[in-house]
Length: 90
Image (tube, rainbow, N blue to C red; front, top):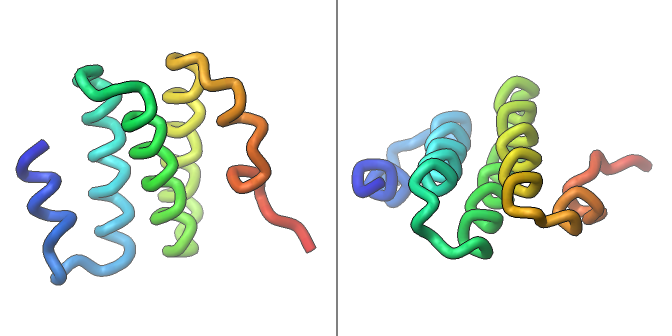
């Protein structure tokens, strides 16, 4: 976690790499299971938002799966139902 947090503070990451590191932070929060439930869900949501900003389909898919897994395991049914997580349509 300290290494990942240092990477996130770095200004040398491009958007793709920042999204990947953000997802890894979310995964680490999930695996460590030391953080409060709300922080783990927030980390997964942050990873999803960061991946969405890149426009990279593979990163977005990984982040969506991470978010879904976190919400399911933590019993956050609202996480699945929130409008901001669903694909936006015009």
